[in-house]
Image 1 (cartoon, rainbow, N blue to C red):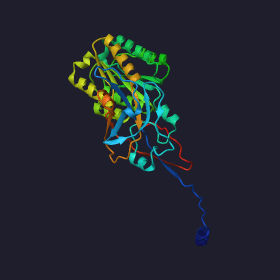
Image 2 (image 1 turned 90 degrees about the vertical axis):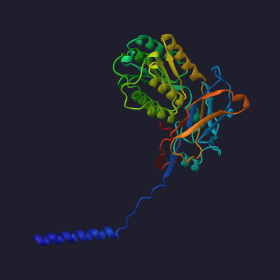
Image 3 (image 1 turned 135 degrees about the vertical axis):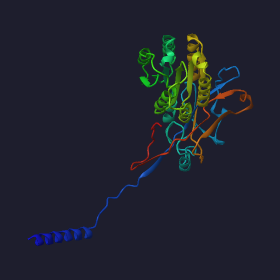
Length: 361
């Protein structure tokens, strides 16, 4: 009986195998996938001033020349201060990035995806998202309330900013108020802060920049610090490079306590200059308020430029230079970030026709 059962099993297996081998297998026809490369434009916030520090307004797109690694770039969008953004390229024209240039660009600093409509491009730099990072370490025991007042006044004065986020730091980062248009909510976050532990400025600044980089459009980080960093494991260069690569200017207001520490002074000045921001050292709360007012004034006078990178084999650090065209403009000073590191290219395959993506970096 056992032998017969084994033979029946083998016979059944042979029949099934024969049927499977002789039955044609019909595979469903797959639609040809559309491969899409998402290329982000590089966005620059540019301040133009004379030798006395006065802002120069009324410049036009053709007054600016942008060069990346020595390669001339063509502006895609332009805006001055809080005015609406103008698209300088036609999506249907030859000015739009070609497939070849998309492959060469391999991603960029920040911004919108290639092929966006003028409305999409305009939304990139309308207003600004401001991230405020407040030092609540044990350096801040003296003058804590005055600093809170200065920050609260600064928040109230940011009438043209789209949204504001308020973070505080000591050894760890505290996201007291997420990015919001509700100024009262942000000020409540300011008032709830208390002074505490050691300062890990660069750790927390890096996290703040990562948060800001998730959003499109103009982003600015404003740091209020009362002293040097004494507990970070992240070097300041990492935070500065990320800010440069994502196009986020960093402004730093520090009290005289940090000015007394030469290393911190040099780091603050070098980091802000590299990102297109500024560093301020305030002796008292009145100077702190003036520093915040200066930052607000700066944001209102920045030119917002953007471009799609031309084909460039360099996958590492790319240097950016912005110049003014014309002899009568060469006397003015320009402040902006000095370069970026391209972010990895992003590919997607889908059965539907490719549509415009706006995924943040």
